[in-house]
Amino acid sequence: MSIVALTSDTLVASPGAGQIEYNGQFYGTDSNASRAQMQRLVLATSQASTSGTSIDFTGLPAWVKRITVMFNGVSTSGASNIQIQLGAGAVQSSGYLGSCSRIQNVSATTAAPSTSAFLIATINTNTDTQNGSAIFSTIGSNIWTLQGILWSGGYNAQHMFAGAVTLSGTLDRVRITTAGGTDTFDAGSINILYEG
Image 1 (cartoon, helix red, strand yellow):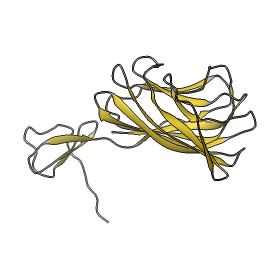
Image 2 (image 1 turned 45 degrees about the horizontal axis):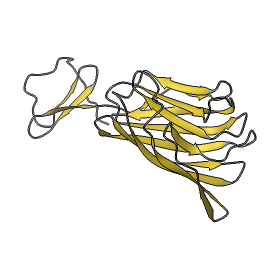
Image 3 (image 1 turned 90 degrees about the vertical axis):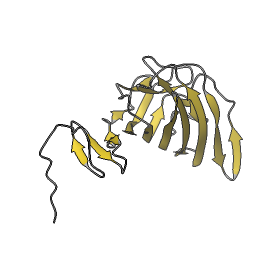
Image 4 (image 1 turned 180 degrees about the vertical axis):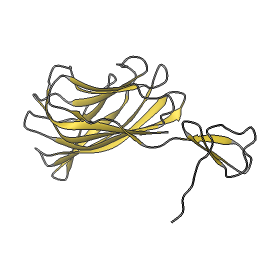
């Protein structure tokens, strides 16, 4: 077994090719001695989706490039569609592009597009549960894209969704809520995994 010991927390002025350094974060260098920060995967604290009209994850660092939102047995008190909103300093409620389709019994139904949020579950009842993931990735310039699939336990159906939004600034928050914002969460849990 090999052990790598890091003995200094000071970045050198001219790193050598392939050198790894530590200064609160790990850095790698390429053959041109260009330094790039290497961010690790960060699993946030899971939140119980058992009360309230929204679940928020805030304080995301500026270096985040991809976010996975994970749903485990999530249920709400009513029939409103489940949706996700992103934000920079505040939750953004406009400029969303995309759609969500439900695949059930070899047939597909597509919900009307929403510009105020990303719809991710287009059929929902107070006995239904949602399981799966939504993945957000940035292509730069505060533009974020979405792709994902949820399985609807109550209907044995899949929700497939995709879209994009341009934020007003650097992303720092994710909100999961319902269309209209009145139905409350009553079962399950939600968490996010983010990376640079």
